[in-house]
Amino acid sequence: MWFLEAPDYGFARQVLQRGTAALFFIAFLSSFNQFPALLGEHGLLPVPRYMERSRDYGRPSLFRWRYSDRLLRLVCVAGMVLALLLVAGLPQLGPPWVPLVVFLALWLLYMSVVNVGQTFYGFGWEMLLLELGFTVAFLGSEEVPPPRTILLLLLWLLFRLEFGAGMIKIRGGSEWRDLTALYYHHETQPMPGPLSRQAHLLPKPMHRMEVVGNHFAQLVVPFFLFAPQPLASVAAGIVIFTQLWLVASGNFAWLNWSAIVLAGGAVSDPVLRAVFGLPEPAGSPAAGLQSPVWWTAVVLAVTLLLLVLSYRPLRNLLSSGQLMNASFNRWQLVNTYGAFGTVTKHRVEVVVEGTLDADPDGTEGWREYGFKGKPGDLRRLPRQWAPYHLRLDWLMWFLPLRTIHEPWFYAFLHKLLDADPATLRLLRLDPFDGGRPRWVRARTFLYRFASRAEFRENGERWVRLELYEAIPPLSLPRSPGK
Image (cartoon, rainbow, N blue to C red):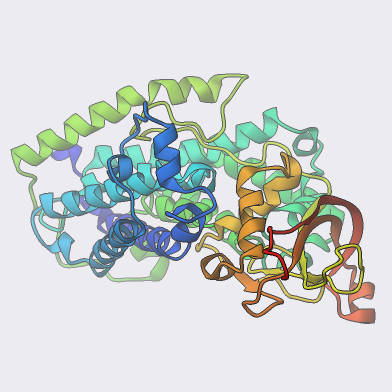
């Protein structure tokens, strides 16, 4: 059926398939490097203990029956290999069922990880990647034209991502309505990047223009993704531009890159050729292709499924009690998204310190642990980590906003007292070079970006003021004579 096919979206399919696969590779790499220390057999929140407590656990996961760090690493390696094959475009050269099977394998493998990841995997971009991977699986291969209904469902995903985020802001803090949100956000966001301070120091009128641009990009532009060409491609270009600004000014794992990949699905081949001055091909490779009946039936069945599952997310978008980053089914398909409905006005950082002194009341012997992404050292330029996700650093940002007395944080402090090598590898700086401190503690500081004058004076990018001691000195029991 010709009206179900979109032969002019060959480039869009390439971007969607290869881009999604690249994001899966990064997600599995992040899990391979961090999951055992955070959630493994001897992690901060061990999965085996979690599964024992959750006997009625109903979410799909390979680890529901058995977990081991070795099995986790095998899952991650398998995911990375499959993702690299898709990035190279090899499965796409075969029949349409081949990339379908590979993408569904990625979806199931990563869902297995997410569904036992507890608070360390409680981020919106986890379910976003799962939904993206499942839907992209039905784009087929080079042997069939891109299915139009799947492309539209991917635009529907981008619409929910953008419009949902826009509505969360309008319904959230007054700072989004009075256009002052960006007075604070660059400074107080979870993990600043190398350009965040420069963005924060822009004049306030420019920050107000940023907010207006954000509202336009998230509340108006998404509707034009469904418009005829070239309007849809123009809307996609605006989404890509705004997302690249977010990439440059912060670290939000693969959230922004997912939106960029999805926006690529709205760009048609004729528009692409017109923009870059490319000649008209003698014959489009997909123009003479026809989808077999069985493939058309599969695509239509999945389309119907995802349309039925769209009912509750659509109601949520229209609801005054809009949920943010919520899934309405155990398979995490057709979810609702959103971020930063309110903006934190002040940045409070938890600083973790240790000492070798026998007396914890001394003030001279305390040394600060350094994290890879979160602010600490006042002179250090923040790094660009996204799309890689530093899970420990992100949860450190949430501590002062929720409660610092999280079980995982006390487990983290005890791992530091024990100089656990896996835990120390999550950090940038171990001030004891693998040795065990006698005591550790947690203090809180109010951080702000240094002004240009302050930076010229002392070279420090941050200014901090101590607030209070959040967790007093802790130590491990020691045998007599030690």
